Image (tube, protein in one colour):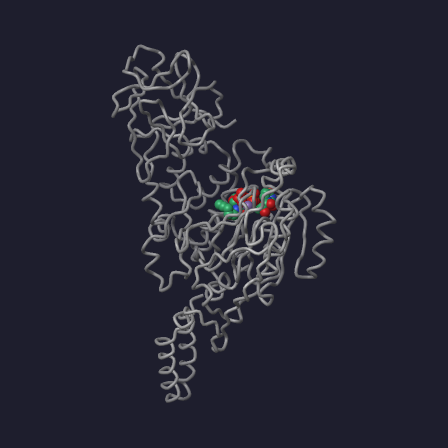
Length: 579
Ligand code: LR7
Ligand code: MN
């Protein structure tokens, strides 16, 4: 990882030996090393563009030569437009795969992409004896060309001595081209690419754990099946693990457009973010706090992050298995990123995000697959059940309440048996969630403060119309609407907290002269303008001094002068339960 820090370590090692045998030599040696560090640290010397290798034993730069410029569809990570007569193919593949496979199919599997790293990334050196890695790609009914482009990019952009294998794990796909065509195609890679298949659908979480168990490399690196790794992506991920085997490293994930395959940097150059969460367990990213910025000497160095998006990371294989891999009780998709993150931090490891390692990922417009049989056996939304398992295992009681306040239905979901998870936590002597919040995720509560309890929650029914307030499935900012009460919660699950905030999911309800709106909650605040009077049943806006009313003709919601005997202004909260 850090050249300079590593060199220091070397100095210590060498000087211990020297002290034991030849004190004079030691003096000379340490002097010359000091000089080396002060006057010609490789980063400073080489930042001017000098690319001559540094002659220090045991270190290498691994920087490949620039890729030759190529013209062709999507080359250089540029957008690829299809002809108008291909529109039907594009649409069809988009609905099948969540991405435009007609477009992907025309782009070379070896296409070039722009080097999106900070310029100084070229100048780091890494130990030449880094551990080797298995790159594990789990997939369920993915497009052939995007899957293979992922594999090609790994083969093309990884120093071969560090790539033990690419391990493809098929999670029970039924698409024809993922059968013998896939098997024949990967023969060209010889033993470098291995394919194993599940006998039934396991979901991505269990499939990744299986991949880890069956991998041959010392380090495991997970990638989604629609990625393109960038220049020299692997050594910077392996290096921190080489220094400390309880480190998880995470690349910076750039976006690949799901309809044009254009590759775009996720953030403007030099801007660092890290992974956090809000209390409904939605994954978020936040500016790197200044405490973390100050902790590093160079802007391109790795930094600590409370969590990660889930798909792309590297870990020592045995360490992953010592942590119990993923909780096997988690189902299909979601929440596993938090489970592993909390487990790592609370049980003595750490997570580093690595600016010099960049990987592109295709963000789909929607999820093209269902959760299969595994989901049908369960009552309630599967992802929330996963979240509940994770928070019941890793949160302290106080923090569990924030989750249940934000996600009140979750209290009634069956999250299964977590005895084994709690035993593991005990056995590994893991720290409290409070410790994690104070020391690692200390920037979460500034954005998402501790939640006051709900006074009321459930569907919000109008007495006159007997219909319910509803987001109408539209993302904020938007107008709230009214629709028949359905009792499932979701877009009709409304909460009023002790500080007067009306919320739906992670969004808030406010109102102005145009009507009643779904808005982004004010970051850092849990207050709101609302007051509910249980006797008169009006919902009162304390700043505008008016009440919410439904228009009997149009169903439009607006603020009117309060008239507590008017049933169009009367509201009733009713708790809903999982169905
Ligand atoms: O049942 C399944 N079996 C699978 O093998 C469902 C999916 N999969 C495979 C799938 O083919 C893909 O290769 O699992 C991989 C991830 O599934 P995606 O690509 O549909 O997930 P995603 O990119 O929408 O979701 C993110 O969150 C997931 C939560 O469980 C996983 O952690 C994904 O890996 C993760 N992706 C990333 O972190 C990439 C960055 C995007 C963000 C944010
Ligand atoms: Mn993905």
